[in-house]
Structures are given as structure tokens and as C-alpha cells.
Image (cartoon, rainbow, N blue to C red; front, side):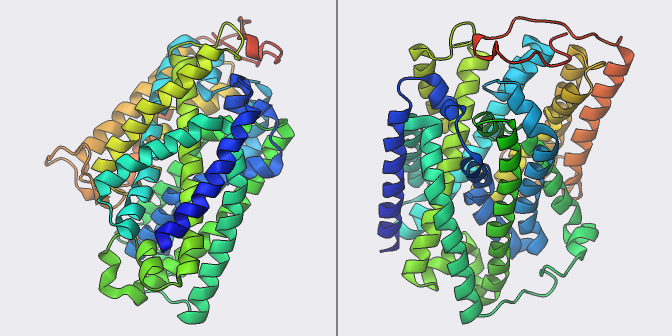
Length: 497
């Protein structure tokens, strides 16, 4: 009954997304950016869907149940903090650039030699994020439909691809509006049912008032702070976040939407952390039986409540996965393959190539989902990698235009990624769970390094940028040819060196 109800509800929203495809009208501009027409509420909803999807909610509840309130709440707190920072410092200037993808910024600021590594790094990182949403869909079908996890992942791939291919950003916008309504209703209903039926409780040492989770390394403080920092800063260079900012009606709209999205994230996601803590005392030994929220909804909650909550999570996951696939495909075709750059963006070849590029991206996500069947961990890992490689050249490239050079940006990217990947391969755990992806057994590092790797890699990236930039001569802004699609935009200070 539950899986049938969820399927019917999600099908209705997906039909709305397919219906939105008529607004594309054969235009790549409409397909990728919804014609830059999105208003504050829609952009805020799309920005908030990053945290309301399965990574943010299932990851939140699983981490809260396993390691404490702050381990789970770190996910929405970090993502909300990112939107606040973006609203204060980045949304308006980035929207004013009139660009299409985030690597476009790196090309205009540093040139093609930085555009390529930035594009490759974002595509690889966001393959991990797609995996997190596929994991949730796989567990859902496994738990409620009896479909084995591996088969469920393979079933989820065409669903996500078809939904995204249909209408692009317009599809995400239409479905996103219904998604946020369902999630608000589901959160309020679940929280109210939990309070009236069981009350709120937390195992000793795991509650929101147990601040040792933020102060003691033995209680996971390093990992919790690393999670917050990775999401708050690493998400600034998220290609789906920036694409949604680029799709907003104007710079002021983009800024307001960031603040609205942050409020939605905190209002919807934090109560799920409290629900998870109470669920630990209810479920007992059943906590280990898959995602704790799924167990609670399938075995204890009323079926109608389960349908509403699960429908919201699945729809949010589809919205996020769709946005990621769309953004990554745009980066592959536009920034790596150079389609739709010298001519108008409204080319049939560019849009067709964008749709085709979604298939390998979905397959990459499926591979990671089968290797690391986690949700919140994959979310953090995505932005951890971006923090190590791109955040420093992005921030200093935008605001320190007199000294940043191509060499400084390349040094920051290479140093940060090499340090982060090296520590990742040598550390036996990833944010508290076993490293089953790339770990090499060694006697050099222990699980105590977990969390510190985030700070060390980001620090190495910053140091490399500063050393090379300060050793170089100051640079003067230089004019450069720009794409037809951005030709009307004012040339930013400190363009390609």
C-alpha cells in the first residue's frame, strides 16, 4: 500500500514536470536556465531541495541516530549556512555575470586552462551526489517493494533520466513547488505524530544539549565541524546551486532566494533530527535494519503518514538528482566539449548533447551508489572534494583580482585535490563510516585523522594559492572575447590573465 501510494503521488508530480517540457520550446536557454525567469519563491525552493532530498533527510536521521543530534543536524546547518554566505557575498555578483555554468566563471577569470580542471572536478564530485539520491531510492524500493538493492538502483536510473530529459530546469521548477508543500506537510505531520504518540526523547549523550559533540574529539566534534565547514564552503561552488542562481530573474532575486532557501532548510530538516533521536528509543535493535526513518515509517507510523513523508523525500531526491544531472551535462557539453559557446546557446545540437551526457553521469552515480550505500556521507564527501579544490580560486578569484593568476589557481586546485585524495585513500573511515571506496590498508593513518583531512586539504589549497599569487607580479584587468550568450554582460574586473 505504501509503495503504491508513493508511486502514484510521485507519478502525478512527474507528469507536471513532463508537462513543463512544453515551455522549453526547443531552446537550450530555456532548458538549462528556464529563460532566467524564476522568481524568489521558486529559486528558494530549488535551492532548499539540496538539503530536503534523501541525502539531507535520510542522512540527517541516520547520522543523528548513530552519532548524536549534532552529527545529523550538521548537514542542514552547513547547507543553510552556505546559502546565507552565498546571499551575502556571491549570489548578486555571480548572477550579474550572465553566465550559464560555474566553470564559465573560471574561464572568464583565469582562462581555458583552469576551466577544464574545474569542469572535470565538479562533474566527478557531483557524480557522488547523484549516488546519494540513488541510494535512497534503492533502499526505498528494497524496503517497501522487496526489490533487491542493486536491482533497485538500476530501476531508479531511467526514472531520474527521463524526468530530467523532459523539461530541464522548468521540470525541476514545477516539481519543486509541489515537493516543498508535501515536505512541509509531511514534516509537520510526522513531528506532531511523534510528539503525541511517543513524546520526544534522546539516548544519553546524543541529544541537542549534549554540546560535547561539538567540543570533544572523542564525541565526534572534529567530524561534525568538518561536515559543517565542508557544506558551508564547498557548496558555494556547487554547479547546481549556481545554475539555479543563474536562472533567477535578477541579481536581487538570487540574493533573496538564498536567504529564503536557508530558512526552509532549517525549518524542515532540524525536526527530523529530533524525530531520529526518539526513534532510537522506540526501535531498539531494529535501528540497524536499514535507514532508521524507513523502519519507523514502515513498521510504526500510520500508512497515510508514511506515504506523505516518503513522497516528499522521493520527489526532493528526484528534483536534486535532476538538477545535478542537468548541471553536470551542461558542464560536459559547454565547458569540456565546447558546444554552444561560440554560437548562440539556442542550438539543437547543444541541447541534444546535453541530454545524451546525462546517461554517463547517471551511470557514474550508480557505480558510487553500489560501492558506498550511504546518504549523508556522500553529500558531505561531494562538497569536501570541492572545498579542497575549487573554493579558494573561486573566492579569491572573485574578490582578489589584482594578484590571482592562472598559476595560483592551478596550484590551489592541484594541491588541494592531491592532499584530499591522498588522505582519503589512507584513512580507514569517511565521516565515521568505513571507507569502502578507495582505502589502502596502511600503518600511517588511523581513524583519528577522519575530519581533520577536510581542514588540512582546504588549508593546503589556500596556502598554495597565496604563495604563488604573492610570488607573481600584480596583474591588470584584461579584455577578452566572451560568448554570444554573455556578450551583453559587463566585463568583470580581473578577467582572463
